[in-house]
Length: 311
Image (cartoon, rainbow, N blue to C red):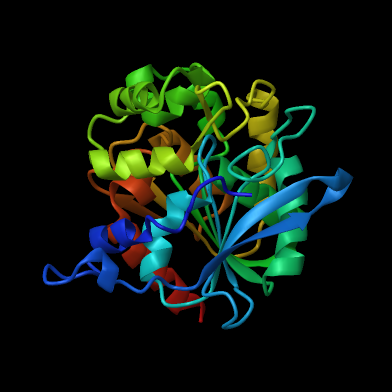
């Protein structure tokens, strides 16, 4: 369970999204209902998720984060959406269990997330997946078409994993931290590393995100709240499987690209449109890979339009 009050920082998210006026204080903000739910899936593993506006109705809107992130990466979006939603911690991330084999392939992630959707959501769902979460979304939709009715992929293609191996640390941004040290001597040392990897991110938002993604150990050091993905497969064969899965999907798909991101190339978009001619592509100017963090207002508008179109 959380080792800190993970919902105490939602007022900061609300302020960034313009939900708290200049005449108000954080104490005036009433946070939406949100609770953490743990679901036991295959092999006794537990997958954790945040249920927003829990109790209104089972959510049919689900968000999957990227590698090295967690469900709180969607807080800015979900604090501003006025409807039930589920943000899942992928296996090996956040408060979900780490796999003993450290295999976080999209196909295995999809098996675990599918069980969460069956028990915690109201399928078929509208699914938003970023990076690793997007690849998981493709695998899930291909394997369990009855669970998904429309899909938004945030800055990812089946080739993004392979492409990332050819990118510089500057191009990777905060993603480069996944390959860095698993622990730091202090929170401030971890914050310095994160700041160097994300120099354009607002310090307050970066510090908040880091608090959600780190934990203090008994010896006073700080570790990431995710497995370091040492056995996360990245190869041409896995990419080709992703392309095959994408081609088999029959639901509407929107691709949201970060305008300043190198994770999705024009050649990737052309191939995606070849296998899925109806694919809609949106580009968010001024955003890197994590569009939900760099340009949350713009992504919120796109998600709201996506929801309205699928109503």
